[in-house]
Length: 260
Image 1 (cartoon, rainbow, N blue to C red):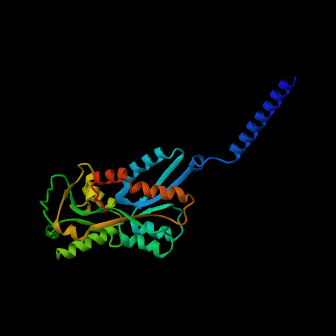
Image 2 (image 1 turned 180 degrees about the horizontal axis):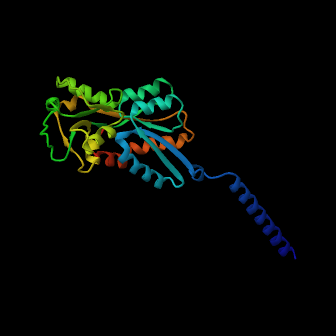
Image 3 (image 1 turned 30 degrees about the horizontal axis):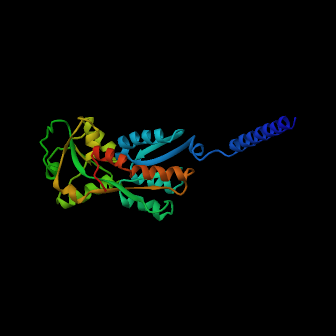
């Protein structure tokens, strides 16, 4: 009887411990589950559209339950949106000057990190029907040239390159981001545009890219940073670190970007 009583007491103790353990685990989610069902909002330069879209999928796969949403556009426009309070977790800009806008406003966590560089080329229709070989050719009479707006990093870089080549031209339009400038050429609405090398590569044959030496004097650094207003600060930091990882760097360089 004494043995049976001890067994009964032991069983009761084990059941009680199990119940308490179950209650404890249900009320205190593990660290892995705490990262689930979160949305990460990333504002990024238009030239990052293709690579970041793919990298976002890879980040989601490595963080089950996480959804990465992107807003791509001109870096200067995105920076103003952040300063004005647009909800976002991470910002990736196409120039340090654009990133400085939000750093000066106190919206950045830590020091932004340059993760890639990018260089300009002249985008022309396939086959280069106008025979453009360099920046000086863009001044030919009747030639329709498109640039990015001066406030946008690709526009600022274009002005540096044109100054270095001592070339002055009047574009038919100035676009708000590099994708818009490129589309003018791919749609046959312009004969040439100054865009990033990565955008020509991403166009997959819809345009050709003409290299020119002055582009070396207008290379853009791309910084990335987590934002203070982030509702998922740990996840934002993880995304910033992921973009600087060897895996992400390999994909960015394969897309035509240069190592930082």
